[in-house]
Length: 89
Image (cartoon, rainbow, N blue to C red; front, side, top):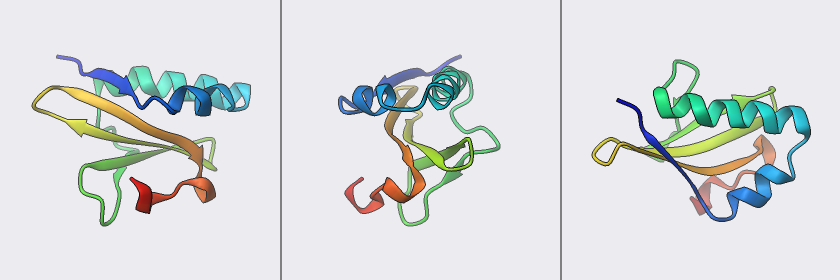
């Protein structure tokens, strides 16, 4: 059974601002997360239980949460690694 993917409201502007090839890769990852919310390439963030990250093109990250009870993946951020503020999550 697949998961429903939700997006944080500010995420739309972040995705729109991505370079084209990164945006395409991010959209593909969003679709993949609906099928497998914890792929082998994902990692749970240290000190942030329930928050995961995936790399995009080496310098970009997708940060998201997974709720197994409601079968929901919520995409929180898509930013360059150095631009993500994990304290604000």
